Image (cartoon, rainbow, N blue to C red):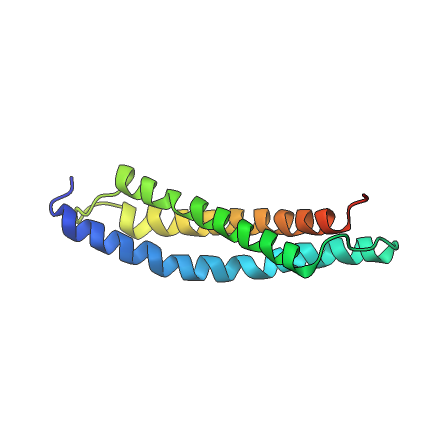
Length: 125
């Protein structure tokens, strides 16, 4: 049961927004890895890029916006399952586990997304 909702809401937003920075930084290397591996394979077989760097950058920004929208689903879980009672396991166990598992899943998706951006760039016309 939530005793002081305003204080709980403030601490929850502070927790999630601090984690958002780490989340975004964790997604950059896998996205570029997926892009680099797919672009390296495509360029290795002679495919030429069909889009400029502006289009590729736009697709990465669009992917980042989507990733942040998915991260915001953590707020929904926070306010459905969260509790500020002293005996609650949510802040100590479930919240960090959700951040960890969500970030690992997002890293997998960012590898796939980077690969898909490279496929779009080097696709046959």
